[in-house]
Image: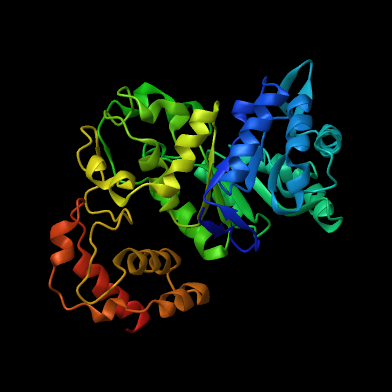
Length: 381
C-alpha cells in the first residue's frame, strides 16, 4: 500500500480508503470480514458520513485494536432520527449527534471532524452563522477532533470555505465526468443524463481552481464518488464508454491535492477490486487512451497529468513540471511551497531541448514545449 500525506495534517493515509455506504444494514460478521481484509492490505482510513448508530458500534468494535493507527473522518451535521439519517444545521442537534457518534464508536476523538454536505454558499454561511464552525474549532482545541474538514459536491461552496483557511481536509466528488460540469447547488445534476447530452470540453475551470487552491494551501482532498455511484463502470457511462475501477482510481489520484480514494465497497469483492489498484500495471491504470476516444467528451489541449508524455530524453518529469506551472499561473505569482517543490525536482522545464517527442505521445495534444518554456520563464530555470 502506498501512503500519502493528507495536506498539512501530517497524517499519512492509504491511497485506498473505505467509504461507509456498504456497511449500513450489514451485520457484525460482514464488518469484521471487511476490516480484516482492509487491515491485511494496509488500508488505514475511513469516512463515516452516515450517522447510523448500529453501524458506528460495529465499526468501533472492528477497529478498536487498531485505533491509534486508523484514521476516521467523522461528520458534524449528520444526525439520526426515526431510523433515518438526516443533515442538520441546528447547533444543539449537531452537538448531540457528534457526542453520540463518539460514544457509539467507543472512542474519545475522530481524526477529521468533517462538516457535512456543504453544497451551497447559503449552507456554508449557515455553518458559520449558526456557530458550527466555531464548535468544530472548540472540538479541535479540546482534542475531540484533530483536524477540521468539510464535504461538498460544489466547487463554488468548497472554494469559499477553503479560502478562509479554516478547512484542513476537503472531501470532494472527483471523477472524469463530474469534473466537466460547472458548479451547481443541486448535486443531482452531476448524475443527470441531460447534463451529458451535449459534447463537453475540458475540465470545469472552477473545479480546476479548487484542486489547485487545495494543493497550494496544503488542504488534503479525500475522494468520494470516484466511480460515479458505479455509473462510470458500465456501458451506460455518461462518457459513452465504460471505465475500469483502476482507471477511475488513477484519475482521482493524479489530481492535485488528492491523498486517498474512499471506496464505497458494498461487498468484499468490491473492496478487493479497489485494493488491487496497488498491484495494477501502468497499462491497467492508464485512463488517457480511453479518455482520448470518448465520443462525447474532449480534453484536447489540457494536461491530464497522465504520464503518456514520458520518458523525456533529458529526464524531465513533465507532469510534475506542468502541475507546478499551473499552480503558479492560477495564483498569479509563485507561492513559496510551489517554488520549493519545483526546485526539488531533479530536472526542470528549462532543461527541455525542444525535441517534441513528448508531444507526439500526448493523447490530448498538449503544447508541452510551450509549457516547459513557460516554466523556465516563471521559475527561472
